[in-house]
Length: 361
Length: 157
Image (cartoon, rainbow over the protein chains, first blue to last red):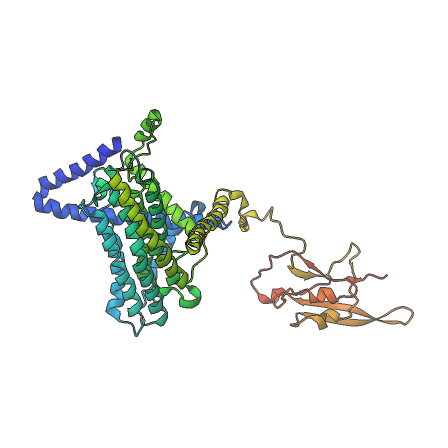
């Protein structure tokens, strides 16, 4: 628990330093700014890692090599891409609604950042611990659809608008089953706070403890969250043949990069929520009866557990993208309304029954 | 009841087929030996180009600087975009016979589409496609080549 103490003492040390030098109000402001910078850094670093990871994994799955020229094994390629996007002109179409057009990427990005607030990275490293953490994440992340619709509408381009409509329909319908699958676990552990959900998994992750309802909920969450991310196989908003690039067709330069960044941030958030709720957050893997094994697992710091699980989830989402063929819009809505939603409602009832009877561990 | 059974069966079938797809891509992911990409300028030494790759038209000469082209210009007629120009001359032998012989075999690599029609029409199998492919030059005039070597002559049967 070396790192745990370190993070706790680090935040405590910063807090006391700021209180001593600026007083309580100054310390509050300073901590706001510091945590904001920390979150932006985290998101940018994660996005760069994820872009490189995605390109390499995609290449390996398609028997290619991927980026190889810039840096060792193409490791500087994401930085080169970022520099290119920073230097490009942000073009606004002449007949676009200029205010909404420039506002939309900010809304999409801010929403992605907002959803990061209640995530508990390690014990003692959390921006904000509300007692409604999961509810907050699900409700805030659904504001993102406003940004997408705004981008599509203000571009004054029929393809952008159609793409935005599609991705709006997709996000709104898949939010239901994503929320219901999270509810399955919340029914079992009886709390919405992310920290308490993780602490309730100290004797086993929910995917193991919750038996069949939790496993079904995990699968539904994986499908529905991939659909919410607008990624393949659910990337109908970005159909090159019919809609060019969907809602961000007219965006270029840094405005496009913000949509791109928010897409990857959303992937990160979805993986973190899935990790927190189903895979035990920063809790180590314990197998009942293997005491020495459990002891070894305890030595791995919680932050490594957390990010390891997050990266495995991200890998699975990338794996989905580069394996499955795309769906048509009718198949997409059929999957949600005919399969996922009824199954998750029935699953929620079963989970409620299981938790009343106390059948989980 | 039957439709409910079909509903459940379709879900199981869907998961099965998705899992088989993921197994294939996953197996590619853990086997980097299967990668098909060539790192071109780095692997120039041991680059493998298939024998039948259509790189450019060549007029093979043997060790006596003799080729098989008798200047019939069938390849020039077959060429769909005029990349081939054949110039012939009349040679007079010692016993007064007049023979048509190849003077210049002009080949424009820049406009050649590598359709292989000239090779197929050639009655004496004089021209061949070679598998060389590094043709880039700084001046497009360098792509217009004379295939018969200076001083070469027809291989008499």
